[in-house]
Length: 256
Image (tube, rainbow, N blue to C red; front, side, top):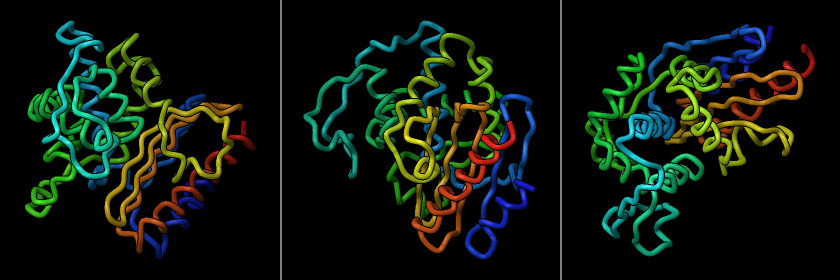
C-alpha cells in the first residue's frame, strides 16, 4: 500500500524513482530503482568515499592541508565569501557534504582525480554511477557530460554505511557523522520533527531534486531514497519530496 501511495505523489507531476527500506527487518519498497538519471550533488557521496579510502589506506590524513585559490571559487559557494587559504581535508569534505559546497567539491575532484574516483565507484560494485564533470561546468553538461546514479545504488551505499561494510569502521561511522551535520532543512526534512536525527545528502538541478537519508526513527531506522526529475519546477519537486518523506515517516511510526 505504501508503494502505491508514494507512486501517486508522482503521477501527472514528475518522473521519479525510490527505494524505501526498513533497517529493522529489511522490508523494501522500490520503484524504478535501477533507472539511471542525473545525480546532481549526490555524486559527492562517492567523492567522500574515495577520500576516506585513501585515509583508510594511510595515503591521506583528515588533517592534511589542501590549498584553495581564488581561481577555484565558483558562484554560490560558501568559500566565495572567504579569503583563499589552506583547508584541512576534513574541512573540505564537510563543506562538500554539509553545505554541498561546489568549490570544495571541485577542489576535491582535482585533488583526488576524476578517473580515480570513478575507479573507486567501480571497485565498490556501483556500475551505474559515474562522475563525468565538475560542479557548475555547464559547458560540459551541454556536451552531454552529466554525473549519473540510480536510486538503487544510492540506497545500497546507505545500507553499507549503516552496516559498517562500505569501507569498515571507523571510516563508515565518520562518513555518517559528516552526513549528520547536513545544513539543508528543506525537501524531505521539512515536515519531519526538528529533533529527528538523520544522515542525509540532497541534490538539485533544474526541475530535478533528489534526497537520500538514513533516518534514525523512534520506532525503527529506515532508508529514504527518493529521486524526482522532469518536474514542472523545483518547488514542485521539493513538495513531492516533502510529502513522500512524511508518508514514509508516518508509516514507520504507525507500523512498528
